[in-house]
Length: 503
Ligand code: Q9C
Ligand code: ZN
Image 1 (cartoon, protein in one colour):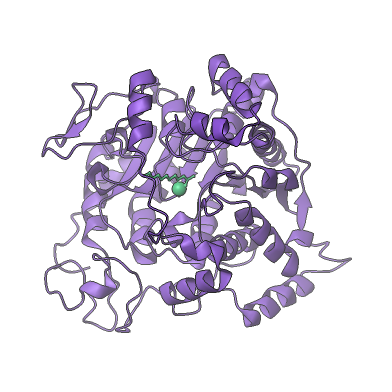
Image 2: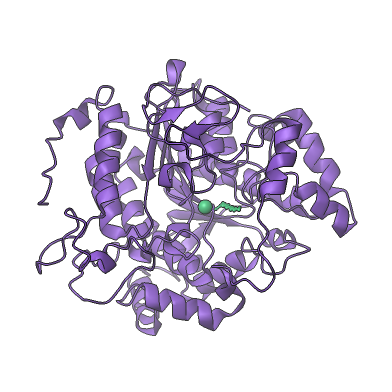
């Protein structure tokens, strides 16, 4: 496993095998080597059966919807009115036949992913219903008819080996050939947050192959953009190790496969944007010294306390060798971040870098867990649509979104549908950045909305009817990331000091 070295952050040391922040907060083992793997396996905390887990609402769709509506009290949800709107727009775009005017957006999916599920925990949050519920909504709202279906396929072994080691591939094959659930569970527990069942290998091969097919269809102009509704997810799957519900790194494999095929004819710059709430450490590793791929991730970090608990997720990891500057981490050190925080980060940091990089293709690791109780952020479906919209100005609109995480069924479906709507060329839905209500929007101690009366956070303003609330940790991260990257991205050097108390 590649452990990129720190390039000089002062809050991080990496001198021993056990990474630690200098203030003494220990970070979790990284699963390196057999001993560490065993230690990490022992560390995985399995909650007692009676403990309420943040994703228990998944089992009860009514509870899931209630929670969603509580998190997004405004118009965030796609409701019955919106259903009619979306269908009406579809009809208006329909000139020569049913939805014939669209068909610019590729969509790839395969039903056999539902055979990959956890045999010993029916409440496991990475569930097939994430797929089936989203697909069902796409059908209901006739979005699927407006997309060009791309044929899914299995990745070849050679393609998987562009990212993973032959030993790892053999290991996954041997684990998934087990039949006894107890043995499967035992082997799975040697990894950090992974399950294998006998159908996992096939689903993982097809998820990766489908991402490649879609990326190629977009790059070659068969469709303008696309969405891959695939499982298992990929961005935590490292060269020799499954991790975080991920088996093969779909997006990294697609990027490497396209580079292999098209570099000679001029493909030189791929942007990977990772908006899953977790850091895609495996994608970072895959391209850490590769200038042909800019990896940018915005993720919850909490000074290393949020999973995957790695120092390499911090902003001072900027790439090395020829890949220096082509790794952009935006680590956020609080819970409760909202649309306005992400928008500020996109406008002031990410978009300037992306424009300057000028990618020829954009691949999004599209997790929707910054809008669910597991991520403890409150990104609305429209914010995901807005991020999609902003990326549309790059690479002539050549982009694909590939599903990563996201564990509220309603949040995934609504957010993915909003993104697909935008990919189809419709304007993104409005954001509610001006939150004047006393209503608490996000749960969690550090919620911007809830700190109105705490008096402690000077940067969080909600006392004026026209102020946009920003979490102070978003501002701090903006400063830190810009500090690390402004020397290599001149467009960032245009930033002036952000006033301390007024925005
Ligand atoms: N105590 C994706 O969103 N959490 N993966 C483990 C262990 C694992 C997330 C907590 C979260 C994995 C694709
Ligand atoms: Zn995630």
